[in-house]
Amino acid sequence: TGSFRARQHSGAMDPSALKHIAQWRDSLERACMFDSWGQMVEASDEYERMAKGVRQVLNLQGGQWTEEQQRYLAKLAIVAQSRARSAQDLSGGADENLTVETMRKLLPSLRHLHTTATPAFPIETPALKKQFSDTNFMPVAAAPAKAQQPPPKKAAGSAAAAAPTPAAAAAPVSAAAAPRDGGDHSDNEADGDHVASMAGGLLPRKVFSGTAVVVRIEKIKIKDPAQYIEPFFTVSFRDSSGAEFAAAQNTPPTKSKDEYINFNQDVHVQIPLEKFPDDGAIIFEFKHFKPRKQKESTKCWCFMEKDEIKNGSMPLEIYAKPTDIKRKKLHLLTEKPHYMHVTVSLSGV
Image 1: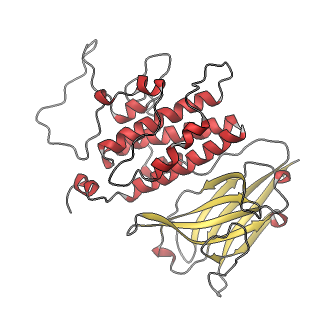
Image 2: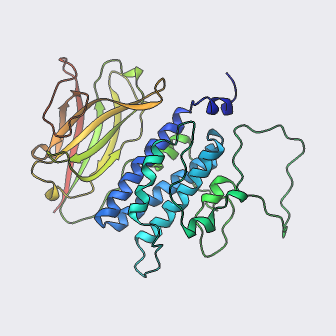
């Protein structure tokens, strides 16, 4: 079997690590989208969510990553946290070196973080240099070494300071001195699935004037449901030209399978129904993880057009990939009566 470090050098990566990368990338794309639209509260929330997810993974699963990857992730959490603060800073004290255009530079390198040659971190700002030092960085070991002696007890008032762990290096800096591990242990009891969902996924309910739309993804009927590993839906909102008009979201992966793959997840649309374009639609892409190819793959997709968005439950036809976001080339996945089942709830004025 070999050690995890050997598997890392051979180019293999744990499936859960690949899922984290995909979710962070999705979260960063949403944050940049909100940022470019001027929706600074939403952008700040997304940057914060991503930074928190990265720190949690470094705390709980740091040994799954190479030293270079840990350095990259520690820096990623720092700049995401910094941009979250800058996005809402109206005092003129925002870091002018960290703009939405700068944050977009992270997307190409983040896509390739799983490769053997870890990409260079593409951002360098004075704040990053201040908070992160390559010479004072202690990566999490891939496997714990046999202890030669008991760990030393903490000495009050000791002048010696240990090198920061990746999670500590990535922790946000406050005016008061924070503990080295970030100080907040309330989320450290979460398991890997919870950490993954924190790193990018469903967005919370948003309060606005107009008709709020909540779509509950209940289940999907598909052949051999047991074969799909960590299945989830990507939900996007597009007009007939393919342009996105609201923030896309990912459901958490599910393990509930019988004759259906069951989700029972609520998607809170981030704009009121009145702001949907007349040719707008909700696109549902069913995705799953392929260990052999080390990637997520789209199996099939469904959609719901604006005039179909009404209170109640409804079945949606399932179409074969590739997803046609313009909805012009439609081919049923199967001739059998298989459907995706959703329930729509409308509320508000």
